[in-house]
Image 1 (spheres, each protein chain N blue to C red):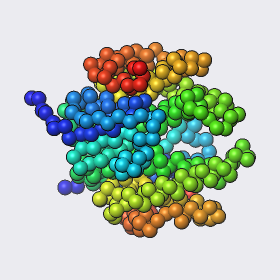
Image 2: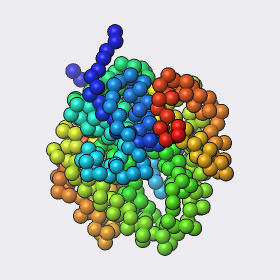
Image 3: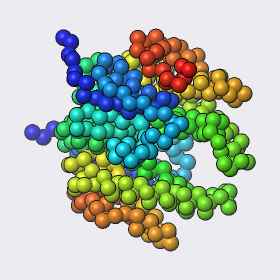
Image 4: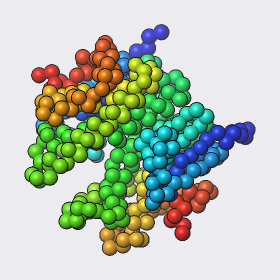
Length: 220
Length: 220
């Protein structure tokens, strides 16, 4: 039975936000209808009074569904899974669900921070000059260690047995590593991604909705 | 109907870990039986080969239940709620559940980092001398801003309408602020906790299992 939902959902997104990409994957996987509002990171449009009235943190992703206004990607995805259970993004067994949620947390708490640190050092302007090279080395080391860990966590096609939130949360971070490799090849970050992670990325890139979710400014 | 569970659960804990305290609250709230292994932060007992074989990150909390070995507090708590649904720690409505999960994420991603930064600066030894005062000021400012935010999020007795994971995740961080205030009153951190948060803390401290969960080394 096919179920149609009204386009009640508004999705606030910014091109390049890995957490917003995560939510986008889930919306697409569930074949939900949504109205997508796209911010740029270059402007200050996430810090306007109008947007801060929606999300006081001035960040994306934000999901609005009827009278619910929700931020924090982990909360948004759990809400979508509960409220729109068709085409689930959590596995069936409680053990695999636990693994999926663990990987989501580890991607956010351990893999993202050094990746963000690298980005800040090599793509954004640092005001404090001399401190940067040592900091960059530390971030690169932590990023490498985490990618070795994630390589070891991938014993199957997907992180939690079947395609799940764990994969949707992790893929955008891996894609960002490869993008940084393209733009700053001297750091050799692409070599941090092992063969299992590389094959996993290929599987995600075969999903029918994958191309649609590529950050718009990466396509330019 | 009363349901009895076998003591299948092992809970790895360290005195003073706010994330382990969060899980302890949930185990106690659900009246589960568990075997608790207590680590100290002073020794290296979380970095032994034996423990790293359980959790490669060498951190607490860890929950073992039958053949499931799980880390990351958010994943542990969702698992406990799914597997032991009696005495729920998530509200009934999907809207309130979403709020509860959002607050848990914000406590971990925004409130904890500056609090940890303050702890590192004032309780632990910093090797890099001059950098510390400016860093401490930054952490204190961010901590203050976050506590103002959390004060504003508390429009009712509890963060998500009824007692939930949001409260269990947030309380340990507030208690740590007060403990730092006692030990280093010159930073005036206690004043960052507004009247609603203070009243909220009093409500948590009235829970029948509260005293049991106070970090053992805080009682000494």
